[in-house]
Length: 452
Image (cartoon, rainbow, N blue to C red):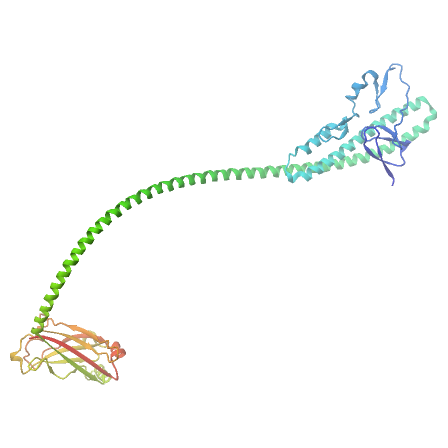
C-alpha cells in the first residue's frame, strides 16, 4: 500500500496520505491541525515576535497571529474553526459550513417526490465531495501561504536553512500539481452537480405536471360527483313521490275493488234471475219447437235418392273432349203420386266451374200426376258425395231454391222438361279424386223435403 489512514487528534477526522510525506508532517484536511506520522501533535516553531506585538498569539486553526486578549473572540470568526452541523451532527470548518447547510437542508427537506430521491442523494454526495475538495483546497492554499511565510522567515533567520527552503519549494510544486488535479476533479463534480440539478429540475417539472393533471382530474371527478349526487337526489325525490302516488292509487284501487265487488254481487243476483227466466223461456220454446216440428212433419214429406256413377274417369274424358259434357240420372218420383225429377251431372264442370269443379243440377220433368200436384214445387234438398271409406266423412251442401228468380224452373212443366237448376261449383275435382273416387266409382245422394 502507498497510503495510510491517520486520525486527527483534535477533530477525529480520518485522512488518507502517502507514506512518503513531505517534511514528515501531516495536516488535517478538516481542521488543519499539524501532526507527525504517529498522529501526535507537533509543537509549532517559535517565531520571533515583532516588538510592536509583544502580546500576540498564533491561532492553532488558521496559523495567524492574533492578540492574546482577543483570541477567544477570534475563534468565533476563524474561517478554519470546526463547527458541528445541527442537521446531520457532522463537523465542518466555518468556511464550508454555509455550503454544507444548503446541501444538508435540501437533502432533509425532501422537496421532491420519491422518484427524485436517488438523484438528490447523488447530488448531495457529489456536493459533499465537492465541499471536501474545497476544504482541502482552502487548506492547501493556507498551507502554501504558511510555507511561503516560513520561507521568508527561513531566509531572514539563517542562510544555513536553504536546504529546507528547497524542500519547501518542491513541496509547493507538488502541492500545486495536486491543487490542479483537485480543481479538475472539482470541475467534473460541478458538471455532475449541474447535471443532477438539471435532472432534479426535470423531475420537478414532471412532478408538477403530474400534480396538475391529478388536480384537473380531481376537479373533474368532483364536478362529476356533484352532478351524480344531484341526479341521485332528484331520483330519490322522484321515487318518494312515486311511492306516494302508488300508495294513493292502491287505496283508490282497493276502494274501487270493494265497489266492484258489491256491484258484482248485484250482477250475480240479477244474472241468476235472468238465467232462471231464460230456462223457463227455453223450456217454453222447446215445447213450441216440438209442436212446430210435429206440425211441419205433418205438412212435409221426405225421401232419398242415391245415384251410383261408374267409369267416372272415362265420363270426365268425354266431357273434356266435348263428346258428352252432361250425363243424366234415371228419372225418379218424389212419392208414388209425386213430382217426376232427375239429376244432371257435368263431370268436367259447367260455367264458372268448368275444368275445376263437379257441377250438379236438379231438373223437373213432365209427369203423369202433375194435374193434382201443388205448383210451383216447394222443397229443400241436401246434395251429398258419399265417403266410401270407414271414415264416412261425407261432403254435403244444402240447396234452397229461389222461387222468385228461378220460378220457371219449378212451375208445372209445359214441355217434357224444365230448365235444370243447382250448383255449378259443387265440389272440386281434386278433392273427388283424392277422397271420394274409389275404383273409378262415385256415389251421389239427394235428401228431399217436399211440402205436401
